[in-house]
Image (cartoon, rainbow, N blue to C red; front, side):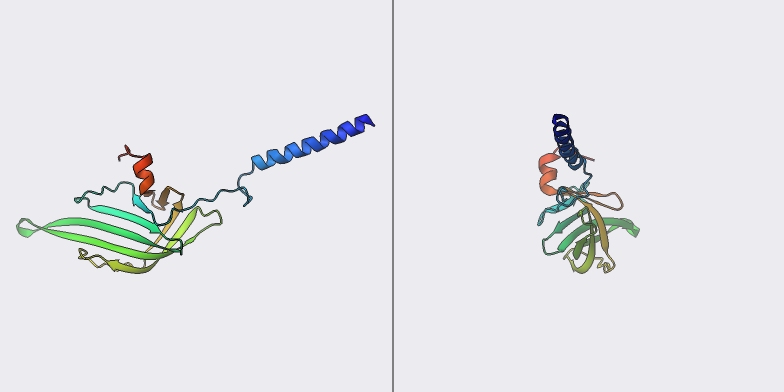
Length: 166
């Protein structure tokens, strides 16, 4: 009788231990155990190689809002030489308003789709962007588009990567 009781208790303890081991080794399949990635709302994610100096030729950022919308802020200044040593400046400067949705239940991918555009006063190109879209992998501090361009949340970049340069 003692052997059967000991065997039953041993099996019970081993079963409980095995259950805890299986939960600990879970790869994230259970929604209750998975920690979702999340964007920081109303904070800019700036292109990592941007420099905010006035002479910078490319500045790009994303801002997301909790209502499923966001803004893609773009500035690019390029120049070309024309006859007689004259320089022509081409400035693209606009904000694309977009709607976004998560691509997967784990919220690790996001798709952004054009909604409208606001050209800034210094924009002299007025390019048609109505076919604009962006697919991003997301985390709290980092975004990366499908081409490999990295965007970092401003607060994270300033606090956690102060000495990082490209």
